[in-house]
Image (cartoon, rainbow, N blue to C red; front, side):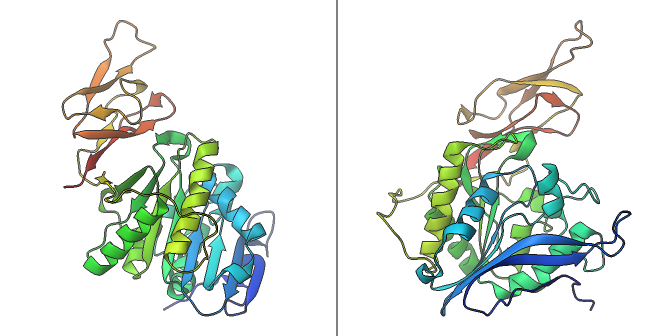
Length: 334
């Protein structure tokens, strides 16, 4: 089997803090023997679990990269018992472009796992994660937001697993994040996401969705910062400073994995939602209308919810085409 052609000058076993890059050869029109340099940091201190932290999976989601940059600059290795592998801008071409997908090959990094070591640049990135980083790790934290197309209630995410023991560990780690909501997201059963690949590799896996709309939300940055530190403490890697967070005795778990959780656009137009994030909604209730601004005589198209629950995500911006996700309902797990 062909191995990844990515490489790094960082020694993953060396103690202390190393800040550097992972390199992928990239021969472009203006740079025949050039390469892609993706930021990579390893902080190592003694024996303990290894946690891989990833931000910038999508390039228009900013709270995660901000928080991971803070950790890279500010964390004293002496506070660790174990190792952190941190890639705060893993999909670097997309991060630099502020885009969900890579401007080089047009691919969504989070739909390319396990990758292809001889594929396009995005497929090579996911192959490096799958082949080099996942085998080194015991746990994986993947930090997202709604990006440019969604506004989402800040939440910690459970990736489904068929392994009952791993599912329990994933839920416990997600609850430790201490987000306003805990949500199971299965991405329609798609196995090509980084969290699905991490679970397949047997890693304790925590996802996060921090607000969205392609902007930085100050409260979401605080939540993300606290949540990452809470999970690292839960995993036994990082000593806690200050008082532990107050968490509910029985955290509520929501689910958007069902087929009726998503309200999809049926026409091209402008979507007008009827509710705000956090509102309680029910199946069959009108969710909003699609307006046809260039044809004012045409009545709006009404969309309805397919599930009972809490309005978890909303389309942003207003312009939609058939198949766009307009709204997402999170239902309480029973």
